[in-house]
Image (cartoon, rainbow, N blue to C red; front, side):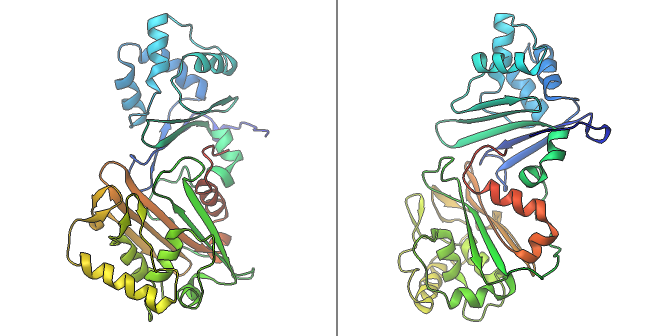
Length: 332
């Protein structure tokens, strides 16, 4: 990968923290006024010395697991400030607390770790790298909810992409799932789901979406609302028993679950009680998106359903969103 700096890219770096603790989208993004990733760490060598954890949280806007350890070690051991990315790589490999992988190159620092509860990852990216890799980084750096809903041309092969974060005993291999449904676009998806048998290999979330579609629904908004209020769980996993059968019967089961939680502010969730009022749903012609509150500590589940018409207009978002949910920690 060759990255060529230019004047438009200079003067700022990006930080991304992928963590279920960080709000509805499970990520936190911060722009930092340093010219390079190396400059940020060099600044931390001086400014963080008195109280590394407080400084990191103030700088990045998040309590980034383990990151303060490099500045603690630097202060306690009087480590020399890194003069190059090669120096920084050696210092991080020896002194940064990481329970996963660490990658340092000329334009980034990328870390996967965990806090013994959930997998976490964080990334320092310079702007020349961001400019060079939009198909990998556009979604990671997108901060606003909802995603833009404008659509492009419909002259390609119809295909709908279903992308969702997964629950249960997740690690980076099972953090998300992506399924492509060929031959259908979003406007026709409710009818297509009603007429489709559940194949082996579908994730439980897609099986639930099919069952949640009502007999007269013409878009996905009612189905996403039912998922937002889903209250049937088997420990940390969706209880989808019976939902893979005929659609009429599957939807009857969904209506029964809805009746059991009707009017409740708190409903059963994978880790206790959850709040449907904390969920968000936005449905347009070619993009449906939802975030569903799962737990006050462990956050939200994200679900995106988009077709080739939306992807034609938002090529980089579509490509990078798909990569985000495909179960690999490293954005690059």
